[in-house]
Image 1: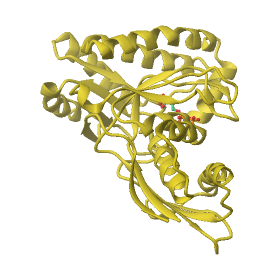
Image 2: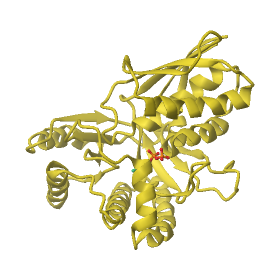
Image 3: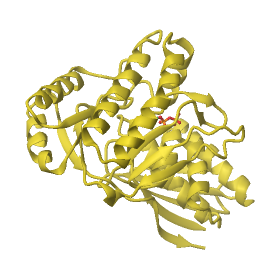
Image 4: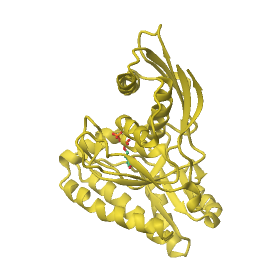
Amino acid sequence: MKAIAEAHPNIALVKYWGKRDQKLNLPAVGSISVTLDGLKTVSSVHFQPELKEDRLWINDKEASPQQTERVSRFLDLIRQKSGIKYRAEVQSHNNFPTGAGLASSASAFASLALAGSRAAGLNLNPSQLSELARLGSGSAARSIFGGFVEMKVGEKEDGSDAIAIKLEDKNYWNLRILIAITSEEEKKIGSTAGMQHTAKSSPFYHQWVLSSQLDLDMMRRAIFSRNFSQLGEIAEHNCLKMHAVAMSAKPALLYWNHTTLSVMHVIRQLREQGTLAYFTIDAGPQVKILCRPGDAEYLGKRILQIEGVQKVLVTSLGSDARLIEDEP
Ligand code: DP6
């Protein structure tokens, strides 16, 4: 009763920030992302009759009680669905910094949904896997799929239509996503707490939710017409709007450091000089830069020169989550 699966993180071009139901982890807004190649989480789940409790290792280190508890609650859902009573040993390996705004919860819960359900003998289709992954982390619902992915906000109370769908495959459009690492510290306020706090205390939250529909419509159009400048402009606008609403919470949420801001300025300057590149930032200080393949090398070198940038990862569009090993 063991399975191993891998999933890639994703970067939201139109962001999920806010929930309409905390228990079922239903988003208040839809979102659109690109799944990344190069970066990945590999998770193995092994249900064993002799275990008294679930155990979790992340990158070969025993996880904190909070992390283990979150994964254990997720495994409870798989136990409910499959009728299995056993506890599990879970190993998760990321080949990128954990907890610093690189969407580690997305690839973690997407890989866990696939490995955990297979280890328990379930054979879920991609939509069912996306629904399951969402219960672990909203953005994980998108990492079940590769390429361009949309998370539907859904209408149903049971959350069965709050799932991701693939908009276009990874080979549809050859783009690069550079990731400027500006800090490897764990962020202080994670996305779950950050979005709840924003919903409760920002005077602009309602407007954020209302305006996301238009961003989603325009982003879909930009993708379907392969219009790169439109894609970049909407992504940058939506990112700044998400951070603006988070900054307007009380007390304010500020995920950026000095270097984050320097990178944003350089990208805007480069654009004025004719290099088509756009930034987006999640709930952390790293800056993700969207560009076309021909500009990636120059941009990577230029960004690495900015004081405080520790490294630049170059990625392109990644594949669906996949099963690596399956032992009944
Ligand atoms: C800023 O998916 O981490 O990255 O559902 O509470 O686990 P939970 O939140 P999570 O939030 C991601 C927020 C974001 C934007 C995005 O990925 O859409």
